[in-house]
Image 1 (tube, one colour):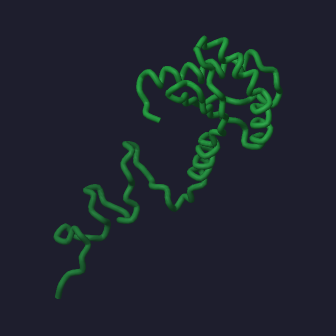
Image 2 (cartoon, rainbow, N blue to C red):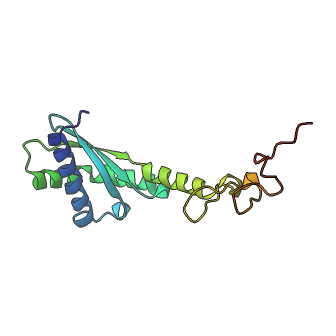
Length: 153
């Protein structure tokens, strides 16, 4: 759906209203620890797609709770928004939080061989070049041959 300032305002109004309704006016224990992450209201305000984040182990319970409370949520939303038409609510699971946790765990498990050492200033330390003297040349090489190439005969 095309995003304009008006549609963003409508989407945010629905998201905030549903979040406050779920927090303060719904007592279903299945809906205790959910977060309304977003909402998209259709152009004619007849349908609202609502995105919910919850604990991954309780997805089925949360969706069942939302389906059973859908009518009550729509009624309370209509009272709070005072729109001419109260949108039909369609709930979708937002799994981006779970995906972010999975990516974070994968990054934490990066083997140390792939980690780049950095010096105090944050620049990569070039450990492949070996030891260097005070002037920055590899140890064991002469000043005539700074690249460490073998002398030609």
